[in-house]
Image (cartoon, rainbow, N blue to C red; front, side, top):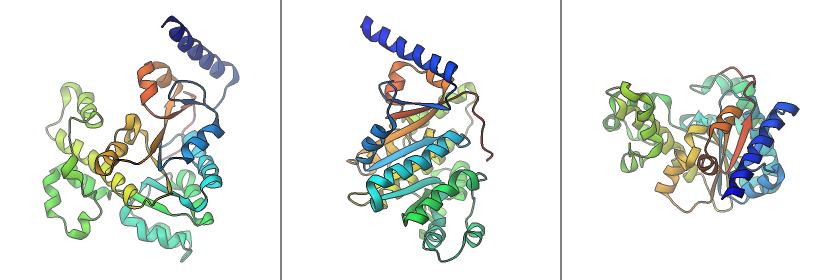
Length: 294
C-alpha cells in the first residue's frame, strides 16, 4: 500500500514539475493516472464502437485535439468512422446532410441551421469540413433547444402537447428511464445547496432530455463495424454518466470509451478514485490557457 501511495505521489509531483518547467499546453493521462501515449490511445479508441470526447466548450486544446484525433482515427477506420456532436440539433440533420453532399455552399447552409453555436467557425467548422472532405457522416444528435426549454418550464408532461414530428426529435426513452436520483442529475440538485428552485425536477428532466436524445441518435446511427466519434460538453459523459448512462439503459452492449478535459488545478484536486473513473483518457490543460469566444 505504501508503494502505491508513493508511486501516486511521484506521478503527481512529476506532472506538476513538468507543467511548471516545460510549459506544455496539455498533458494526456489514462484512467490509471499515468501519462498516456497518443498513438497507443488512438489504437485503443479505434477498437471501440463509440468514443465520447468531453470538451470544455471554449478550450482551444480540446478543439485542436478533436480534429487531430479525428484525422488519426480516420487513418485506421476510414469510412467506418463517423462524427456526432452536441453542438448541432437533430432538426438540422437534413441541412447538414445536404451540405456534406455538396448540394450548396456553406454560406447557404449557415442561415438554415437554427441555434448555431457562436464558436462554430473556429471550433466546429473544421470538423464538419473534414467530414465533407472525406465523405463521412456527421450526426446532429442534440434535442432542439426549444423543446429542452419547454421541458425546463413545464416538465415532462409537456411532451403530450407535441406532434409526432416534434416527438421524433426527442429521445423516445426519456420518460421510461428518467431518474432524478441518478448521479448526473442528483448532483445538479446537490450543487444548489439550500437554494434548490421549486422546478428542480424540470431542470433535471431538461438535462436528461439532452442526454437521452444524444444517446438515441448515437444508437440509431450506428452500424456494425462503425466507430462514432462524438463531441459534447464533458458533463455529458464524465463518470460514464449522461449520454453513456442512457446508451447503457436503452441498448446495452456497445463498447464505449470516453475522453475528458480538465484544468491542471482540477486534475490535482481529484482523488485517485475519481481519476480512475472520470474517463478512459484525460486531457489536462494549463490553468492559464486562453479561451475561444462562444
